Image 1 (cartoon, chains in turn blue, green):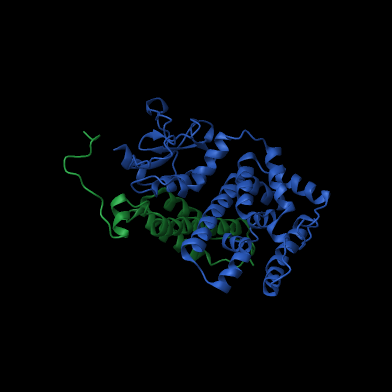
Image 2 (cartoon, rainbow over the protein chains, first blue to last red):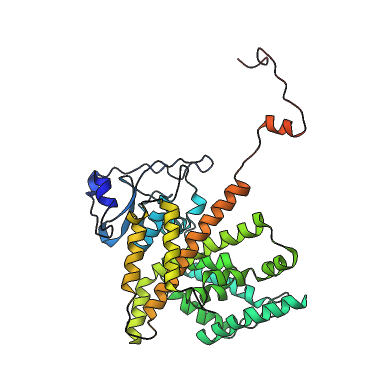
Length: 281
Length: 110
C-alpha cells in the first residue's frame, strides 16, 4: 500500500518516512563481488532525510555504500539518477552499468582517503601528457586531422582561462608553464569535493584535462569529447575497419562513464552555477 | 562545435530510453516526472541567450548520452562477452569427442 503512494502522483514531494521504523539493511551489499547478486527488491524510491540530504530506498530498506555508510546525496536530481539506475536492473545486479552509484559511493566513502589538494595534483598531472597536446609526425592524414580537430579546442581553452598550453610532437610532451598550472589549480579549487571526485574521474577516462574542462564548461558535448579523445583510434578504424566487439564496446563504455562523470560534476556543483548567473546579472 | 540536437529530440530520446528501461509504466517513474518538470520550467525564457536554458539543454543531452550508452554497452556485452566459459562436455564436443561415463560412479565419488 505504501508502495503505491510512492510510485503514483507527485514523486517530487518530500517523502518523510518515519526513520525509526525503517529497518536498516545489512552492509553485505557489495561484499560478494564474485557471485552475481540477484535483484532483491521491487521498488526504488527516494526520500529526504535530515539535513536536506536525499536517500534511496529499495523496497523500504535504505541503500548503503560499500563502506557501510548511509547513502545520501545533496540534491534531488542526483538521487533520481541513482534511483533510475537501480530501477533499470533486471534479475541480476550489474554494478558495472551503475556509474552514478559508483561515483556517489566513491565520493561518500573516499576509500583512498584523499583530500582536495591531492586530487587536484593528480588531475593536473594529466596536463603534462594531455592527449590534445600530444601530436604525431606521421601519417600525414592523422597530423592534419589532429590539427583540425584539436587546435580549436586548445585555442578555446587558452582564451577561456587565459593560459598558454602548447602542443608538441616530441616524446616529452609540451612544456607547461607554472602560471598555467596555477590558474588551473585555482579554478579546480573552486569546485567542492564531490564535483572534484567526478572531475578527476572524467579526466582519467578521457586522459585529457583540456577535453574534460571543455565538456564541463559545456563547450563540447559528451560524444564530441569522446570522439576527440579517441581521435587516433577513429582514424585507424576509418582506415582499417571497425570491430564491433572491441571498438564499439569501448566507445560505449567510455561514453557512459564520461557522461556519468560529467552529469555528476554538473549536478554536484549546481549551487555554484546558480550563483554565477546572479553575479552576471 | 556546440551544435546539439534540438531540445525536443533530446527529450524524446530520454523518454524512449526510460520506456526501454521501465516498460509500459514509465510515466509513473521518478525520472519521467523530474525530466518533464525540468523541460517545462526551462521552456519559456525572456532573454535571447538564456544561460540556464543552455545548461539544462546540455545536461539533458548528457543524460541522454548516459542512458543510451549504458544500454548499448550492456547489449554489446551480452552479445559478445556474456556467454562465460564452456562446460567440459561442450569443449569435448568441439573436437568430436565425448566425456567417458563410468556406470557406478568413479572410485572416490559417493
